[in-house]
Amino acid sequence: MLGKTAARRASAEFVAILADIVVNQPRPKEIHVIADNISAHKTPQVAEFLERHPKVHLHFTPTYSSWPTRWNSGSPKSSAMSSPVACLPHWPT
Image 1 (cartoon, one colour):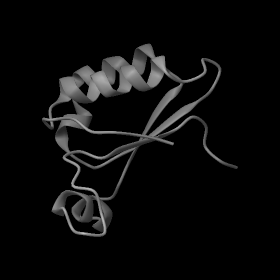
Image 2: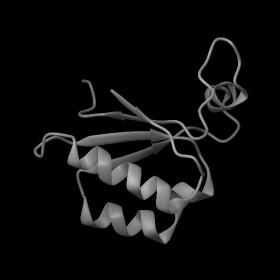
Image 3: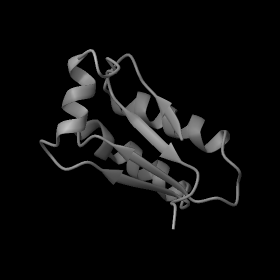
């Protein structure tokens, strides 16, 4: 599992994070990225990246789900992350 954050919640930063994940994972592996459900994760730039990298799959948390809210709140039980992204090199079966 790999976690990354970005200073801004913009599409360009998200694509840069995805590119970094791809570079640092074994090539034959499927990559599943779990991200919160914000518009920056659903732009044409992200769609183009996914077309060029068919082994990368995005999974979005449901709108109004609790874990991104807890991560962004800075509560003592969590890390104050600006935009949580988690990546598994392959989906467990």
